Amino acid sequence: MAAVLGKAVCGVARTLGAVRLGLLFLVAAAGSAVAAPPVPRFRVDPAWPVTLPHNWALGQVSGIAVDAAGDVWIVQRPATMTDRAKAKAPPVIEFDRAGRALRAWGGAGRGYDWFSNEHSITVDARGFVWLSGNGDDDGQILKFTQDGQFLLQIGHRERGEADRDVTRLGRPAGLDVDTVAHEVYVADGYANRRVIVFNSDTGAFRRMWGAYGAPPADAGPRQFGRPVHCVRLSHDGLVYVCDRINDRVQIFRKDGRFVGEWHVAPQTGGMGSVWDIAFWPAAAQSLVLIADGQNRKIHIVRRADGAALGTFGGPAQFDWVHGLATGSQGDVFTAEVHTGKRVQRFVPIN
Image 1 (cartoon, rainbow, N blue to C red):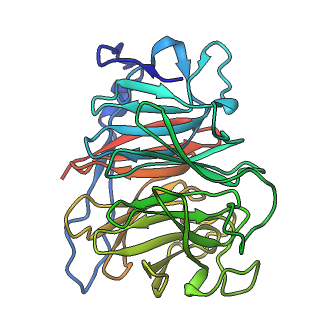
Image 2: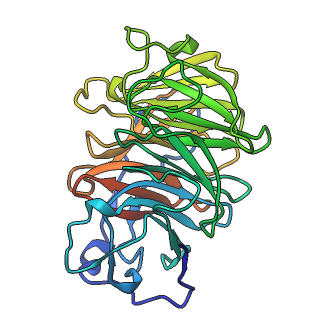
């Protein structure tokens, strides 16, 4: 059930903020033979978002997106909230650019299967909100209006691997939408090892592929690791996939043809270095930001060749940075799971 909160919600939380306001997150630029735009530097905005209404608190914030109007959307996990003195916030919350909560909704409802564990969110160019979940029996993605009206479910709940099953997903992670082609791309996921594409209006299966554009398989040295954690579409029609545990980004054409790959902090190990991707908000999308939850930082790379240009963050600034989005003015929004349980805004300073 949707809760429309209105722009009058304020009550700015500035406690301890003054200490952090002047803290700069500097990016150390690496040398390069290929021209690139200046590498941005950032400072955290300690007053964003403002205090949530209704004494709400967040659990793990697993996904984040920015819509065409510049509003910021998160999906969070109410079941992981630990502040017992407060009320659980709904799973989906929309914030305006000032950080005020506008709408909140989500959870069980008629006609669809809500998730055992909320994972990712994206808002497509037509304004529809897409969600995924990676609970043990989550094999579906969901599509809603911005007011929380249910529109479409693709897949169904069931446990286990399903790399060749096109009727359900396997604990899907990230997703992105090509509104011109009416297609939704799914990074599938925690149980499977594939990218799978459906019609975004009907849910009909279109195509799928594994690492290097090969048919998906359960295992093997040239397959994606688990989880296949994100999928992002660039303006020029390329598909970027987070192969998290293998510390790499693989790049494809929309038909699944392999283009190339980048290795990011390849000695990371553990849970891997490539958790989410966001493009720099310029027509050429010449920079790519990569959320690295294991190393608790954001990598900045040049999209032309994947060259590492710098990082910001670190263990003092992030816990497990799980989701990443950019605004039209160069703001960077991050979502944290584990004990982080927060959303942050970083503002460019050059």
